[in-house]
Structures are given as C-alpha cells and as structure tokens.
Image (tube, rainbow, N blue to C red; front, side):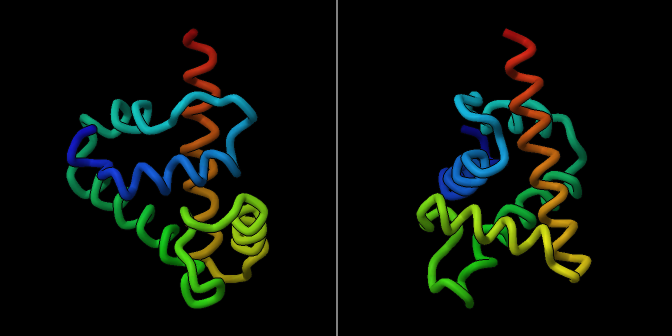
Length: 111
C-alpha cells in the first residue's frame, strides 16, 4: 500500500465499495492507487480529504465512523447523502460513487 491510501482510508474505501459496487466486485484500493499514482498532488490530496469527509460524516449522527457502521446503516447513510439538498453532500456522494463503480467495472472488464 502506498502513501496515498493509508490502511485507515483503505477501510473506508472497502466499506463504501460494499455499498456502491456490484456484489463480488474486486478490491478497489489497488485500482485507485494505480489511477491516482500519476495524478497531480492537489488531486491526490482532494481524494484523501474526500475519503476522510466520508469516513467522519456520520459521526455526529450515528456516533460512529462510516467504516465501522454495519452494512444496513452504511446504506442508509449513503442514501441520506444522495437525497441531501446540500451541494457538498451531493458532490461527495457522486464522486465516491463514480470512483468506486468505475473501478469495479473497469477491473471486471480487464479480467
């Protein structure tokens, strides 16, 4: 694992992958590492910041981090984000959904 996605953020990515990706999707962490390896520093920092925002988002409401929530509560949290009227929440939901679904489908097409 590289410095881009730490073990803590890898847990967030895998927890979100269970919500967004199709069943039996491959691990998204290596795919994201490969995609963002050559990205500019600002884009990589943005990814890290977005993952931490996703991880800590449920904290005030559920008293737990996203990656520690049971799967039904993670699905409920993501649904809440998708229905949010706030631009930041919608953007966070959309970016993570696109990243994880595209990595799942790209990885499955490559094999």
